[in-house]
Amino acid sequence: MSTFEHTGYRQPTPARTVRPGSDGEHQVQRRMGTTDRADKFYDEQVLDRLNPRMREFVARQEMFFLATADRHGECDNTFRAGPPGFLHVLDDRTLAYPEYRGNGVHASLGNIEENAHVGILMMDFLRDRIGLHVNGRARIVPDDAMRRVHAELPGDPVPGRRAQAWVEVTVEEAYIHCAKHIPHLRKVDRSGPGRAWGTDDVRRKGGDFFGAAADAQDRGPYVPPPRADAQTWRAEAEKALERAAPRTADAGAEEREFHGWFHRNVTA
Image (tube, rainbow, N blue to C red; front, side, top):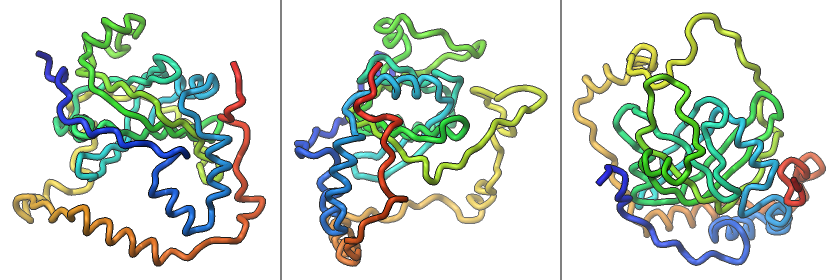
């Protein structure tokens, strides 16, 4: 059996509320007085699949941020990058990306083993200065199994490199990240060798940039912090919500939602 054929613990899918989003965000909306604005955003911008413009956007991205959590709710956020199209659109409800040899920790894959829920954030800093959120459920698929089902997947463009596994994501929510605070960047034309895809060269991977290896020698073995139980965490969350002041004033024209980029009425 392949290393990734057994995907381990799976959290049961909770019953979804009628409105998009979580019960927690709905509770905060009521306390902050933003329910009407949130409903307008849900109605106009939140889809349960990728529309044609979203699919085109995904297909040209060279990076994304991936959020995962284990079965205790302990979170991890990481960065994935590759040539345009490395995040593959298999259909309007399914994305997939390859996982390569890394530092051996497998934090994201380990979380997915326990908790299938993932959040993907794609940001276009270069051209359109817009973002796309995709939330869904992931599973780990061996490379050979993935290619048997999806023979159209291209071979890896880097000689000698091969995906160790794939992460396949079933889309549950897709919605815009507004452009208001996204910086507009441009690529730098660098001379010399290109990116060191898949390298094991410590220096080219960044070395000990933050001096963590030296600190580890000084402090001794890592001791994880105590984990708060669910009851304690909920009590702290309730206190934070109580301290939040309701926001009743209209946000004004500058805060109104952007209507256009990934609007639900966009057609092919």
